[in-house]
Amino acid sequence: MAPPRHPRFSVPTRGVMALSGALALLAGCGGGDDDDGPGQRRAVIEFQGKVNGQDFSCGATYSNVGVGQPGTYQVTDWRFYVHNVELVTVDGARQALELNQDGAWQYQNVALLDLRRDCGNGALPTNAFVAGTIPNDRYTGICFKVGIPYELNHVNDATAPSPLNNSGMLWNWRGGRKFIRIDGMGAPGDVDRATAFHIHLGSTQCPGSDPNAPPSAACGYPNIAEFCLDKFDVDQDTIVMDIGTALEASNVAFNTPDTASGCMSANSDPECIPIMPRLNLDFTYIAGADTTPEQYPKTVPQRLFSVGNHE
Image (cartoon, rainbow, N blue to C red; front, side, top):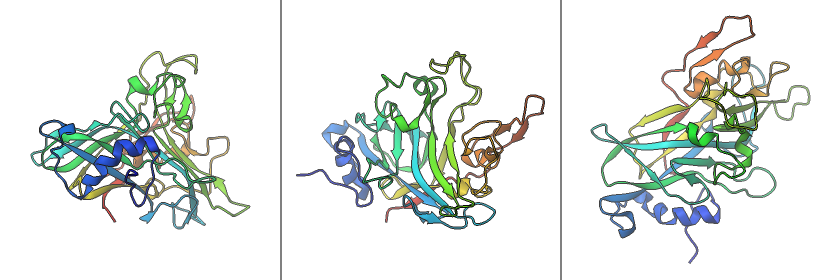
């Protein structure tokens, strides 16, 4: 019998085998399988991409994104890493989700979410789940961090296990990986205004003289954000990531000349000023060597991630 597949997302064969048993528990089964160990249950957490409340479809054009005209935006890549996934009990205690080591999407406590599915020519490997085991208890919330821990972020990509070797998420050895990769186009189809406008989140100011070697010390700006969501039922709910909230104060059809397209986490990039705080991060903007750094605190409450329901 072929392994079950989720009706909205497909995953590569290696990921399917790791998730097939867990997917059956989305209806609320409480565990008890011998494979889970005594007092353990399986849990599958589904992520869903949206743009201003509309379901993400690769290549679709969305309206009213950000500020300025025409406000149209098209997304062509959507991937991000999470780690330290913890479920929160009714009394506020946190229990770490022990991730399945599936050899494809999850390694140690890190998982790669890849929502591209139908981007490019033909279907792509896709993963919209984090799966693992958890003590059999009642949970009412969830916490997780976006990014990769320092000790794994700067491992050599030539020898790194999957998903740390995903080529589309690499910068260089010293800089580590992209934690979030959103590739997009503002004003798509407009020959006069079309502008590449991306969000690439990663650590910055990682010291060292050689980009092809690991950093000599911890990065000045790790850019790892933690998100906690209340009233989350692991058997009933999904986690929605709405990139429209990160772009709500950006003009996606404009990019400052001689800077990276959109925001790629640089402290000297003015396009990052409205975006980084909306990724739940404090941001320091430094216009030049002789300028006073400007501080932009993270937006509270964060709205990048929210609780959704299975459809």
